[in-house]
Length: 104
Image (cartoon, rainbow, N blue to C red; front, top):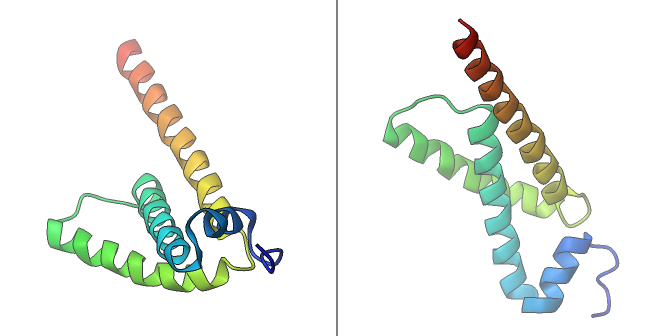
């Protein structure tokens, strides 16, 4: 499609595959899912269910701003990197704690 050279490569591929209207909703869903994943990997504490619902709703609304920014900036790619780094950290932390429990 013409005119997609100014959007991120991932968004351009989704637009070509599904069309503009569906691509916006798909991209927003990806942003919400990655935001929730990064939140849970890095910042989440044990909360009550209603508190989690409020946080997830806030993440969904905040993802609208990220959606606007993602037309020019690599927001999804940055969230993927953040999820990989935090996931690696959590994995290594649990592995280290397990080794300490065995040696104690």
